[in-house]
Image (cartoon, rainbow, N blue to C red; front, side, top):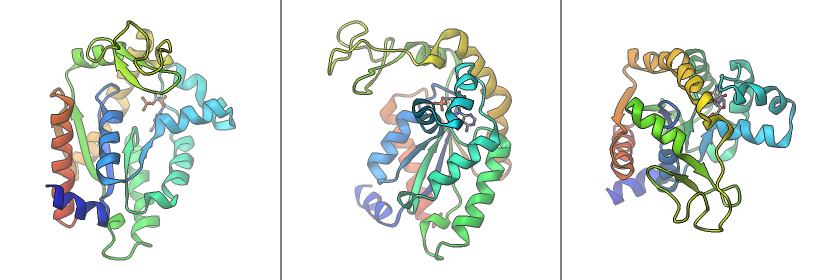
Length: 243
Ligand code: AMP
């Protein structure tokens, strides 16, 4: 596998889309893909939080919507995603985490890749590959524990979960001793809103890819390393098949 992966890395892997509800582990698994294949992770949640932190016009508009756990309007999302995907580091592939989240976003992404990537990429380039779409399936009770237990260090960014991966000292970062924080939208009252938004708006995304036979579902209740191995297997097979 190491040899195949090295080849895959050299030629790129094309677009990878991770689908799944909040708390399914999309961010964690995206980081594994980044480390293994050397492609960037594009997390629309992170892009939006960056706009909020910088106080941009878009950030000001998105801030209250995000704090309520609702979805930011599609039209606002298209601009930030297009800008990011046009950057040079996306040329040999990228992993999308948190996008598309509506069927309209999925249709927009196909059209964007078709127009900007397929038309411009040379025939043998992996960026011409249609995205490999991986759905992380997780039990609802597990999801709640993952979300309510999620903590992060405001200083170094390290992630913890008080149920599954607690810090050595209660609520303090192992690395620098900072007091761990809960993301605004991981508060219990917001979590149910986020899961409801997922049910109504994001499930149609899975349906969109399923009818095109592009959806590969993975059991993400298994240990993190098993899930990673399954994901690498899917990506390697996709690349070997010439995308
Ligand atoms: P995440 O970090 O992916 O859970 O995203 C945090 C919040 O950012 C979500 O609850 C939404 O308010 C917003 N958001 C992230 N990605 C999208 C997207 N693709 N479409 C609409 N809103 C999004």
